[in-house]
Amino acid sequence: MPLFKQTHNIMQTEVDNVLNVTLLEPRMKHPTIFARFDELNPGESLTIHNDHDPKPLYYQLLGERGNIFTWEYLEQGPQWWKVKISKRISGESDETLGEIVAKDMHKAQIFKKYGIDFCCGGKKTVKEACEEKGIDVTLVEQELQKAGKVVSNRPLPYNDWNLDFLADYIVNTHHTYVKNNLPEISGYAAKVARVHGSNHPELLRINQLVEAISSEFSSHLVKEEQVLFPYIKRMVEAKNNKESVQQSSFGSVKGPINMMEIEHESAGKNMSEIRTLSNDFTLPEDACASYSLLFRLLEEFEEDLHTHVHLENNILFPKALALEKELVTK
Image 1 (tube, rainbow, N blue to C red):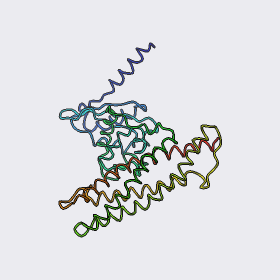
Image 2: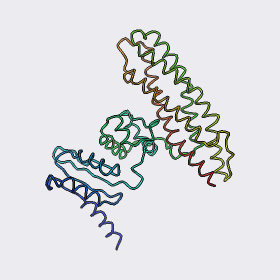
Image 3: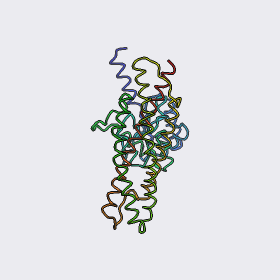
Image 4: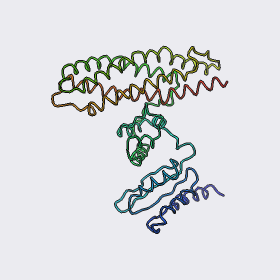
């Protein structure tokens, strides 16, 4: 068959795969949609037309078929609702928050908007994260789809970097930020708690949490810079030179990675509690300049922490584990 004719037939099939639900008897609507969906091959789509939002169908399809489809609104009222339902290609349904952001850093802003933790909680799927927070998953997925289509300044290609370069970047950018700013944040947290703690007792707890973060990071950064990251860089060098790598005293890299992830989760929980206690860093009427500066520094620190932990948990660590497995297999 000529290439043009093949392409035309494929495009025609895509165009024809439309179901006007309003023409069906009410009792036959969902069974017909399910039957049409089941006929799809992975990667194929069905577009349904309806005269109201078919969101109940989304939850029924999710409940009976599982997370094996994507749901994209093409039109949302007031007269017509058009939804493109695509059957996922095998393996796509297991994509985690961390993997999504690793592929497209723009989508991190969507997760931040809904308070979804993509760094420490990066091993969850969108569905799991939304269920935990009681968020409508269709809204989040819709915004993720839109974010994927927006053309904007490309973020740094972290996922494409060599692991030794990424490790150095983390140290030079994020470790340096923590070392330069956390002592200042600790000083202001103690000062503001001392001056305003009687009227705002939550500041006493915030000060405790900042002290806990500071204490943990002081050893955390050392362990990464002196133990874990050098070993990762030795593995990269071994692969480049087609040599074996001498096993470290800690054995598999999985051990220190698990420890780092636990410490990341602890810092993330502490920052989340600080955000809750501060009502999303909202200043009271009697806030002084130091109070205002503390909240601004804390919010900036949280922003940096999200990227910092994401780069390690979702990119550096999984690739280091894969590299070790590759070298051991050899």
